[in-house]
Each structure stands twice: as structure tokens, then as C-alpha cells.
Amino acid sequence: MCDPARYRRAGAFLGALALSFAPLLPASALIVAGGAVQAQEIGTVQSAILTLDPDRLFTGTLVGQRLIAQYEAERDRLIASNRELEAELRAEEQALTDARADMTPKQFRTMADAFDAKVRSIRQENERKARDLERGREIAPLSLMRMAEPVLVQVMRERGGSLILDNRQVLLRADAIDITDLAIARVDAAVGDGSDMATEEGADALPEIDAPDGEDSDNPSGADTSGGNPADE
View: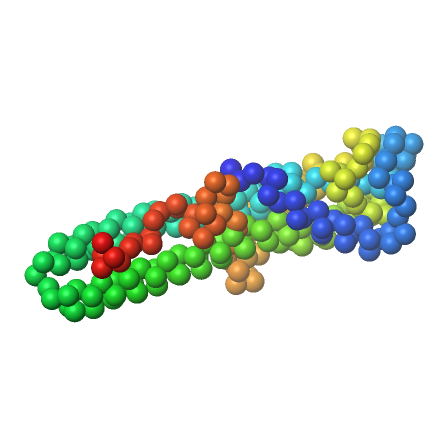
């Protein structure tokens, strides 16, 4: 499972949403005490200030879970593909080295240069795929926040809220003003895992995501596709 800490850029969306409803929010609003919360007659907590955990919204919704699973599947496919390419290149390199004794230096140099060009082309293509995957992972939480915006606005109105803050930026709060669980349930009810919406918009492809920690973002498999020119041996 992807580390939720990687999805903190979603907080920027909440900041923009908050500013649209309260452009003059004082710094003291970051300290939200129980006095800011009022009980409505029907028991629903009303508060001008609400909080949301963007990380948990992403990992807790069906949409977020689908995007995470899709990323992991695409990452695994890229890893497997890179390993196959690595094995093929090593075999081709060995075959060229073995045939060296039967070639003239010029023939061998020509074939070695062609092999080197092939390796560079494969490396560039793998780097492009890895960057695409990286970009998708970065924008996936923002895509979810855009999808969830109507739900969040509706919850905010129901709660009498003027703004929603990223709860990681709040020093103190009453649990009753945290709408994360409600938002997760509402988003799930509204869009499910989001696959139908993606199909309608022609956007089935996963928004690309960053390579996990400990791996080269340009080569998620860690496979050595650099090959190596046999002429250099």
C-alpha cells in the first residue's frame, strides 16, 4: 500500500477551498476549541469551522483505493517488463561478445554501436514510463479532491460551515468538527470507486504516481537496462 504521507499535496486543495469561503480567516482560527461547536436541535454538530484529513480521505474511499491498486498493478507490470528486458539485453550482449572472435574489428564495432543505440532507446522509453507513473501518483489525490468537492461543499452547508481546514494544520480541535468519516461515506455513495466516471470522461488511465521510496524514479524495477557496449570490454 502506498504511503499516505505522499499525498500531502491534497492539502493545497483544501487551502484553496477554505480561502474561497473565508478570505480573511485569522491565524487564531487554527486553534479550534469546543466552544466553536454548537449542537443543533436534531443533534447534528454545527460549526463554522470544519476539518478534514486529505490522506485518510484518499486511502479510505473506494476511489482512492482503486487508484492505489491500479498504480501498484501498473508498477508491478513495469517491474516485470524491465526484468525481462534486462535478461534479453544481457543475453544479446553475451552473444555479441561470443561472436567477436569471428568478426573483423570494423564489423564488431558496427554491431556493438547498434546494440548500444538499442540499449539507449530502451532506457529512454523506460524513463518516460516511470515519469508518467510518477506524475499520476502525484495528481491522483488532487483528482479525488476535485471529484469530492461537491460532496464537501454539501457537507459544509449542512454543518453550517464557512470553511474546511486540513486537520494536520490545526493545533487543537474538537473531534465533532472532523468530517473525514462522513466525507468518505458520502463520496463512496456518490461515485463508488469512480470507474464509471473515468470511463465516461475517457480517462481510464491511472493518473501517474511517483516511484516508491528506495527505487529510482526513472526505473521502478531497479533493473539494469543500461546494458553496456561490448566494444568497451
